[in-house]
Image (cartoon, rainbow, N blue to C red; front, top):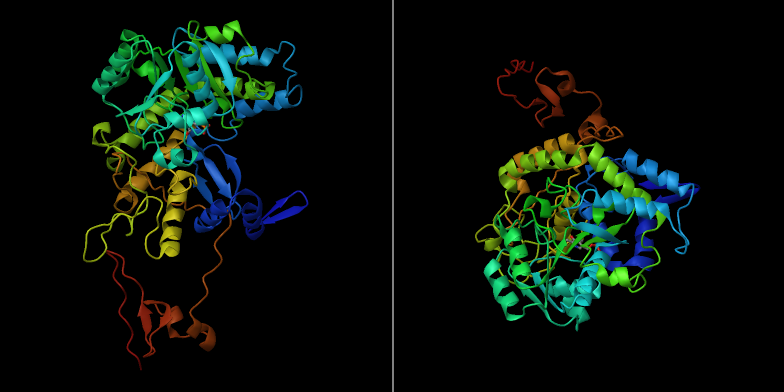
Length: 503
Ligand SMILES: Cc1ncc(COP(=O)(O)O)c(C=O)c1O
């Protein structure tokens, strides 16, 4: 399929070639396996590809809580784009001040100092640096946690496959089982006043792992008791996704630093933030240049933040996310597994040698090594990748093995309907994951913009022209070798008219 961009025409082959030449050969190969779909348009909860297919957009790694191109966000961003998109960084600039005010207005009480950045990983770095500047040089993060891939954030991301090529990483980092408050207490007791604990309220990249009730509150208590520093990474869970503005709200926790990102840019621009208590932020208050970046707090991004906060408030997306969450969690195939079931160490790869949900003939289901496609990798990989791409928004298979369903809360009805439909097809669509998480395979949306081309008629018809089967009341248009029409498929309760005898 082709896409016309101004005077230029993009074909899939050309774009794949450009990926191969300038971006990543691996990425190009994966795109091919996914079926070389090119996404060209998005609106609300829906994504359109170059060949006119529409997908429920559960991708974007959790960016689209308000869907794509939300009008309130677009309005703010467009206004700023046409007046003052980029600041000098020398003079006062009102948009960043207003964006900070808007963000703090929805934060847990006590979190009122904001450092804006672009990516989630930068927000993580900011949190870790604030902890270090405050004397907490040991990091404790959780197994299965995901905090990004810059060096500091990667050190906290307990994922061997990402860490291995880049060692040595930041020293004094320990990874503890998620949900195990006792293990955390032992670590904090061994190093009082030295530990920064970073964790997610619900592990997103780890496979949507919900900890036992009360766990987050207990973590906060322990961190206070042993004079630690708590960084709550809500880059994915925040901004209403959990049915509260923040996971912290659900358990009445106020961390030293709360991290947000993804949806903060309204699904339009990349923005993240580390929001700290006055005490935790002191090092940055003292020296405003100790941790800066050129694009931090730029007016265009800040307009998106203001639009995003407005959109979530005005569209009541927090409660809509709560309702949608209840619907999704009520689908039998989507109930999350307890964190305790999670095996230690990296999870098995996402690929199975057999079609998920079926055992290969004469044996138990086998798993391939992480990232390995098994025998006949291309065909099998292609099939799995295509299915996987539909519900994971095209995440690289084997890259993380992390299933995530980033359904926009703005599209509660469409999304819930779609998810229910996917759940009905659960026999094919869902398998409990090795990490106790779950995976949803959203089937391809039936609607197409362009009508399907008519099916070619069977060859025999074309060769011989109109034959008896075409107009026979019991025929479906095809003719048997003996010249009789092929019987139309019987519907339940539908009686076929008797066949006329051949003369
Ligand atoms: C909880 C969490 N923290 C941090 C990050 C890193 O964000 P980014 O990819 O924007 O650097 C992610 C990304 O998925 C995340 O889920």
